[in-house]
Image (cartoon, rainbow, N blue to C red; front, side, top):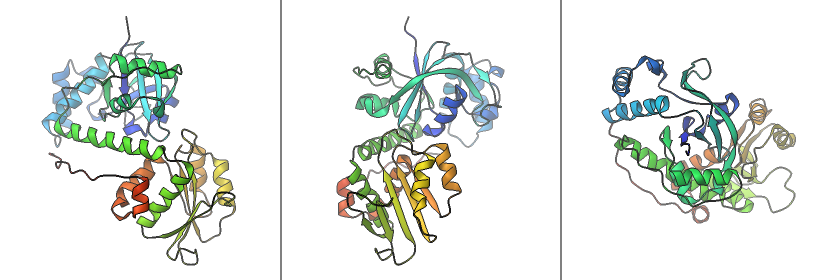
Length: 334
């Protein structure tokens, strides 16, 4: 009998490291306490409504469905997948325990199941259709058999034909809108990730110009740790002088040593920006916090977020690198 395969999202992809380190998956709604205190979905919905009175009825119902599914539907031996949005990888594991309420593990996500993590799958190795399926913003959902099969084949270094995950009838209008937005952002990240190293440097320079700076991009070759320099005058004479290093290495997180090398040649009045599409290790982020100059680390998530914020000011060169169209959505119904 084929086991189910479940996606459990970790805070939009930001908490995947905690899941992997603690060998678990978890969901929130901690204010209602242990799910074992409620006989069924109806009682869970009442509890959610009591604790979160400002939410819509649809959101109460969808939340209760998620909680009941996490408690009842996931089984020991089922596959589970969670997404690390910073590194653009999916952790793939096997559920090892029944439901447990453990606020001591992750206080914001106390409803847990133990997991043995079996490996990772790079997002770029999956088909567009399966990436679209996995882009849902639902905290918890079951993958279709064909999407689950593609995950298994990718884990083994192979590929398979994808299929869209089945519709979740408990989605309310706000969830659908949020879901569409999340998928759009993931597709933008896919497009950015396909740029080559030189184009990525030009894109970062374009972002800085959209923010009001003038930029200089270093020619190919030795750049002494500076790919882009930005300042009000474009020459670096006026402050602030921002020196930028751009590393476009998919799924290769920058470590503390790379940051120390970058910081070694900086002047006291410099401001630093280090862009890594593969993300950063925890040691690298610690190194940035204690740097001698103000230093901002920007992974792919943060780069795309900044590009969306300043895209209206982007010049033609930048828009050619990343063509985007504006879409209007209905306002939230809350």
